[in-house]
View 1 (cartoon, rainbow, N blue to C red):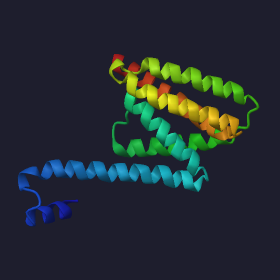
View 2: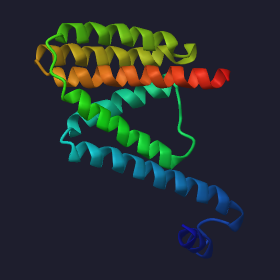
View 3: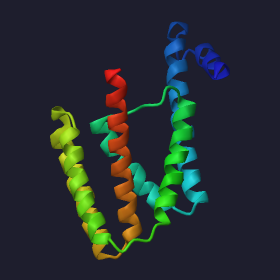
Length: 171
């Protein structure tokens, strides 16, 4: 990273006073790229790439409006993300005959997620939750129940991380 930054200074792309800001930005970009690489590679290896994409969409939307626990450093974040995808894989192995129950739970949990969202973001989150619930109903009608389980797993994970962070904040 220092090599890149020094080259940028030598080529007058940045000034030396800004090197620490650029070092931070490059490390964020590197770890975010590594983060997504680990997530999608894990999804590909476990043969659940489409479920991983659904998970990332639902998880990113809900977490950006609701918040929740954040790992203390990027390495732990990457490891937790890989574990979350492994959990997604395990949930994907469950065959349930309670698919209407899963659909109803999805709708109830989306209402709960809406209620724990900060008021300033509720209107934005509501559009995404309507889209996610519409997708869930479509998936239910297409008998794509493993994708419903994926969305349910994601909602539950978001709620757990939210409450874990709330508990940490009180201590």
